[in-house]
Amino acid sequence: MKTLKIGNTTVDTVLEWSGNLFDVGAFWPGRSWDAVEAERDWMEPHFIAPKDKSKPGVLAASIHTYVIRTPRHTILVDTCNGNHKTRKTIPPFNNLNTDYMEKMAALGVKPEEVDYVMCTHLHLDHVGWNTKLENGRWVPTFPKARYIFAKTEYDHWFANMNGHAMDGSFEDSVLPVVEAGRADLVENDFAIDDSIWLEPAPGHTPGSVCINLVSGGGSALFTGDCFHHPIQIANPDWSTQFCSDLAGSATARRKIIDKICDTDTYILAAHFMDPTAGRIVRNKDRWKLKI
Ligand SMILES: [Zn+2]
Image (cartoon, rainbow, N blue to C red; front, side, top):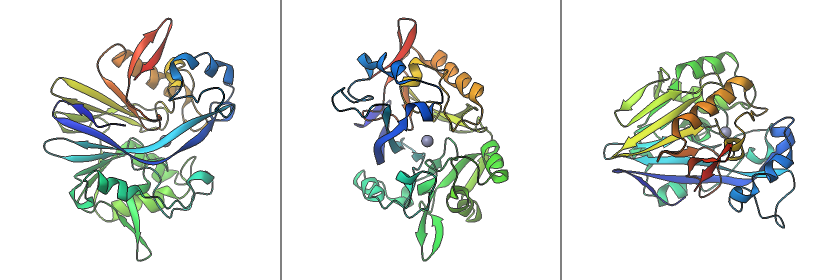
């Protein structure tokens, strides 16, 4: 994604991983590739590969962190999978060793200059770089940052550490941050200031939040995993096998569509392929992502 300017704030992405990930019938149980083909006209080439190159039945995903730089703060939203983490349940994310931190440095972000790390929820692909391995121990990667976790979300996974899409991530990427005294367990409408605040969006997980950004008349909504792929903008009732509340997840998507459709607010989701940023607009009796 090119640097997105919103008022006097910039948003960049640090890409950790991208590739074929969403096997449509398995990831969205009972949903068909025909429904994906029906939206090909606006999804091609970024969100569905051209027909001669596509892997039938599978959609690609991006795993990235958003870097928000306001005049006051440097803020990271979602921290991908991390390096050296054992993730047997999702083989593409097992024991990664990527150049994520070098990419972060190339953007001019030094770990000690990050003020806030915000996780939209605590699944394994959103918390990984919260910590890094140092002398055999997991320590906060961003040593001076406050890590913002919604308390509802934290409490849920504290009680279900080995639930779906966790695979040891709570122990190696969340608890060490809390034990180091760097975490703030907040209400799910917590505000950093009048330009950045959380908004509850339960469904995918019990404490999922969206993050609002407003600056200089512009705005963006970081939607985490309320949407995994733009196909769900056309089909907001498509909840995933990883959603803890299927109906709640669909409700969260509809609320987001109602809130930002045909406005200037960008949707910045956690896994949309490059160019990632777009706006939700009406498309006949459905909706689509306009980049
Ligand atoms: Zn995710």
